[in-house]
Amino acid sequence: MADECFGHPRLAAMYDVLDPDRGDLDAYLELAEAEGARQVLDIGCGTGVFALLLAGRGIEAVGVDPARASLDVARGKPGSERVRWICGDATALPPLRADLATMTANVAQAIVDPWRWRETLRGAREALRPGGRLVFETRDPAARAWEGWNRAASYSVTDVPGDGAVESWVELVEVAWPLVTFRWTYVFAADGQVLTSDSTLRFREREEIGTELAAQGYVVEDVRDAPDRPGREFVFVARRA
Image (cartoon, rainbow, N blue to C red):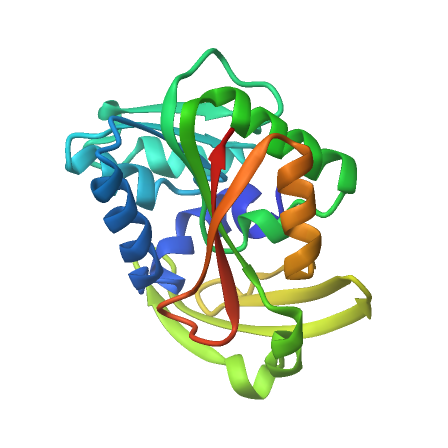
């Protein structure tokens, strides 16, 4: 199931406005171009920002996401007809021969169930051609990112087209290791509506991820620092064996 911030039509429609800086995608684009990727599978594509960037560079992009509201936003963007959109997840994909599969931002950590995580890795592997690569990021647990998830550090007011001023902030709800739950709150000045979205992330150790990748038929080629969050995230590059 998708979190409300992705699955609720009103929240999905303003997601890009609330998170306009997607410089985190630059490293993924550079990797796709360096690989000479012709087909890329974007797992957890959300509102389609990365898939559309790929398509704009002439790469065949396949975006999959369980949140229909987010896909509706993606389909409404210019150039969306060049992307193949799939409502679902990586556990049940049509036949593909992708050169690269990606999970950007929080996607990998949002798959909290161990069985579904293994099945996602398996599904991504089946969608890759032999030698194709899976790339994803995940927060380093040692950085304790959740300690900064509070209203004081996150409160903002954003002018959203069609909705006017929207207040938003995040608050930590629970740490039940290795799961961390937090809640976003959105207050719409135009009509006073208050919406919330709870999210849970699973924090995995570097060694744990490497072991799971190997078990699902990958060879870990590199574990990099995230350019936009140095010292706080791992970026895994794994090749289908």
